[in-house]
Image 1 (cartoon, rainbow over the protein chains, first blue to last red):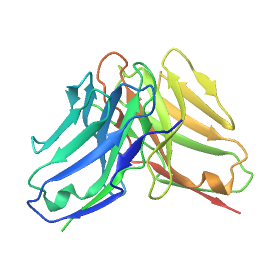
Image 2: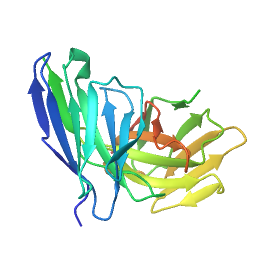
Image 3: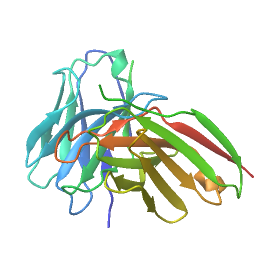
Image 4: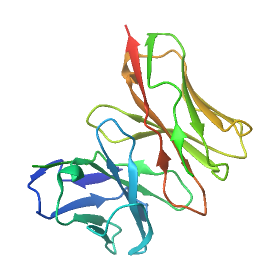
Length: 111
Length: 113
């Protein structure tokens, strides 16, 4: 049973560029959340998707957007990248009412 | 406001000893708590969870204690092993309400052989 998978594992971009990160949830999970984790900090909630809709959003600007597909996989898009967007981006999936399970993350570096 | 914090940022123990990692939370409405282990370069790994209608829950070598009176959570690891070395996060959630997990900064556990 595959767990949560994310791609790519590492990514280097320059300021002003756009990036798309991808996530496939654990089998049987229908809810996907995205988190940003800066070095030495705990993960910060970006948003959550359920039934292809954004259900809740954290304190992140509109440059951060997402999408969930009918197969429950999800994408995180970040436009107009800033140096401060450099972080580990984590995807987590769960069944309703159950614990969230995290993927390995995508390490984004903005130069 | 919401905040989840840890009393100790680092903890160093000898192999075979028991470890206790503490966590304080401030949102009295939180009713679900999770402990995660994060090794370097990896995503957080689920360890154990507890709901607010329980005071204690045990897993394999781990026990979580919840004291709602003082809003305190702890993770006990029995017979700590070198493979337990990692950063440990507690996270809180309000089931049926806010969907997000609120994490603290983490405690780095180092197990000395």
